[in-house]
Image 1 (cartoon, one colour):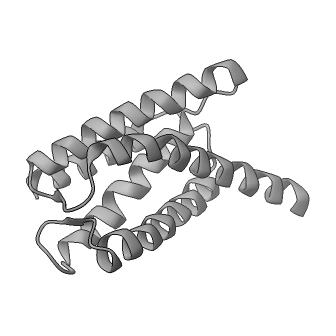
Image 2 (cartoon, one colour):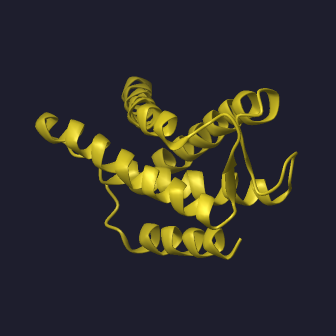
Length: 149
């Protein structure tokens, strides 16, 4: 649990001091999308199918700390620094996928995450698509904002 708390504090400090390329409304709406997305995915993969889990088997209140603390903050950092030039986008997504694989491995070592029929290879294959979905959501939010003006 200490690893998760330190992560949340570190991510929050980064958000506080980072130069903001996103509006606060964009950070807020993308954070809620990221939270909703991870809760939906975890409902099926973790709770229904039992492929992996957080902390101990079953539903734990500590999992909410991860969901509400880690996912939205990392999402804000990832999207805030997303490159504007097309040629860097794929490298950026793949780089963050590697970061997420390393972070997931650390959460397993820290005892905050465990595998049943899941393994890190599945995560490594899915992270680029997840990160692309998060970025696409930001693009939709910006298009809707522009349309509303």
